[in-house]
Length: 175
Image (tube, rainbow, N blue to C red; front, side, top):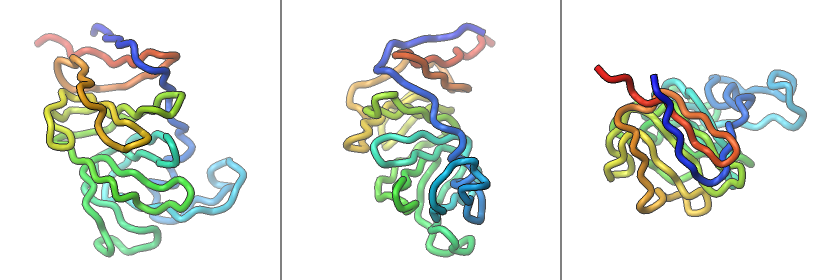
C-alpha cells in the first residue's frame, strides 16, 4: 500500500471523546465522558457515526446514516435527512440546517487545527451534487464546499490522517 500526502492548511484529529454523545441513544454525562462540564442533549443518528470533528461552533458527524433526530426523540420521530454527514451545534446539541449529501460511504472527517476547513473522506464520487473522488474540503466559516479544491484519491479513502499542515490518506492498492 502506498501513502499519498497532500500539503494543506494545518489539520488535527478530532477529539474522539465526543463520539459517545453523538452515537448513543441516551445522554452522555460529564462523568461518563471523562470531561468536566454540563450534560448536553445531542442529536441522534439513525445509523453509525464513525468519526467526528469540531470547527467554528459545529460538530461534524460522519458515518453510515441517512437521518438525524432531536435528542430524546424516539426513532422515526422528528428525523431530518442527512446523508452520511451532519452538522450539530456544539453549544446546544441541535442539528444545524446545513445538509450535505454524498452518494457513498463517508466514515472519515477531520478539521484543520486553525478551524478554517473540515475534510471528509470515504467511497463517494459526488458530494453536495458535484463530483468529488472520495475526499472533500468544507469551509468551516461558511459551511460550504471549498470551490476548486480537488484531491486525486484514485479511489475510496480508507483512512484520513492529519498532522501539522499535511493531510494523508492511503492510496488504493492496484488490482
